[in-house]
Length: 288
Image 1: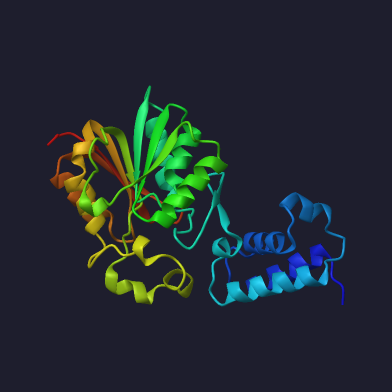
Image 2 (image 1 turned 120 degrees about the vertical axis):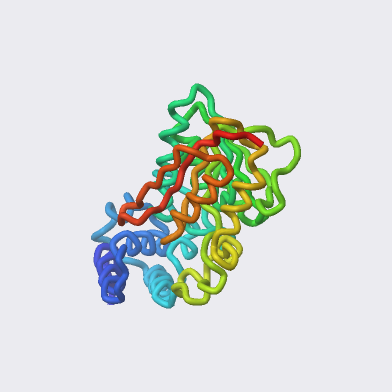
């Protein structure tokens, strides 16, 4: 039986809602648009037209895969963060609304500077550094990332958003310390791996079976990368450099203490939209 684009979208939304998907409206729209090969505007425009059978079957396959656990962003190969369209692959974490708090805090700091050199460590898709560059034309951003697959996505996203004049990706291993001749930065921002190693198997299927464990595993207590950045990367900072971290649930106090122990002051904690302490930020007072 033939079905219109409007009815296809509504049927998919209903299936996702029945399965308990919180963002059913958004995810239904993205799956249908990708499956039928239309933009959001074209989907609305053609709402009363009938869907070709092969397109309907493609959407049904995508919905089935999603309900089995595969995230929408990996199915369609892109996602939006802070208003920016981003390429996404299995090599990077999917940008989440919680991380927009980290980007917002960095943007607020950078905009107050005349010029600002920014380092985004564990950059993944580059979402945070790219948001800072897009919102702050005085920023020059380096995306530091170890995974070659993630660096490839960074390069694609730099080009996609027209930010080649402000942003460069570089291979960096946080646990090995800064590469030579990197220079100093006025702002260092990081959403590092922070899931305790033994907790990964208990994560939701959509995370543990699809997102890269390299970007999740923060060591035995989840704090390895915070310690490494605070202790081993101070050579790329100067007095007055602002360091901003995203943290996991229950980690804010531990990260605050790590930062304070190595010379950071004016430390503040910012909540995410759910009220969970999500960002810890401070200024370096004492140089090594």
